[in-house]
Image 1 (cartoon, one colour):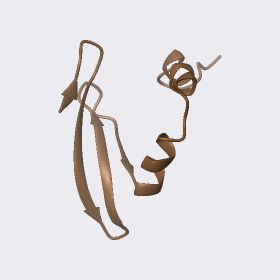
Image 2: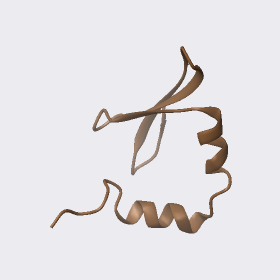
Image 3: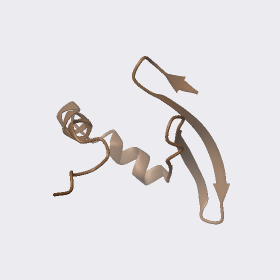
Image 4: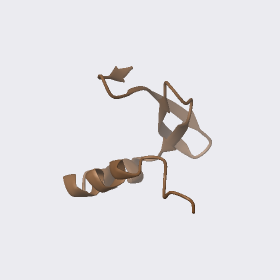
Length: 64
């Protein structure tokens, strides 16, 4: 578990038929994602500004 005053997530290394994945699960909503090594690596290529933009609409674009 990794957490602070804003979020709490559970992380685990899981084995799948396509290799290892990192599972990240939001403790509050139960939403989860499995990320492969390439997807994790691409996170290191991003700027802090990208993460700021993602956090401005954390649940996706608002619907009209």
